[in-house]
Length: 309
Image (cartoon, rainbow, N blue to C red; front, side, top):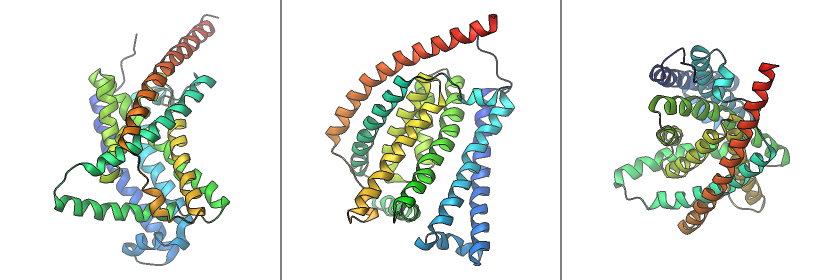
């Protein structure tokens, strides 16, 4: 029997959104303040300093700190308030198998092909010229920050970028969106699909990129299914990291071959490839569900034995 939460799910969701909004602002202010002190410039000019290639290491460090504050802390605070076992509530557990990890790797590959096709579809959606103009301005701002973060001159830069762009966001974003938001919404609405899709939409929107909106919704749904079926946040973190690592590696390889970073970041795929990827994902997810059910059953059985003993 599921234990009643200490705080209602509606209240948890409201608190999570409130904390997210406040800490996003505080995280941005903290980045600006530290950068202004380090570079000895006015606060309003700190952002421009962080976009300069020579300041990429500081930009990476501050961005990682801000992501931890803005994404990790809200979910952890809500979990601590609403559950006596906050980390278990967020989905951190040891019920995992090697087969699940291998299947997550294949799910990641399918998700990458699907996201690439959704990027092409995103560009085909008709929008008013005024909206597209504003969207391109926001996209330019977003890409400027990402271009700085993704600049890799050597293998050491590549490894550091894997941590900053690959691992750190995978942990912090999955804690917030899957371990926090999706879990709350599924329990609140009693519907896995409402929780997964709604979370994926917010996950995509918060990145502030119109031209990446559909791809991130697709990625968010796939990540949501991994977490929902496995009940293990480590697996959705792993998939998120695999996804980011492939992108970082692709950018590193293409730029070493002489291709500009901007072009390397704008790769899309034909829509028909996304259709094939979707069929493959359905098959793989069925195998993943079977394996996850078996892992959870084994874990529950072992845990019950320990309690009895």
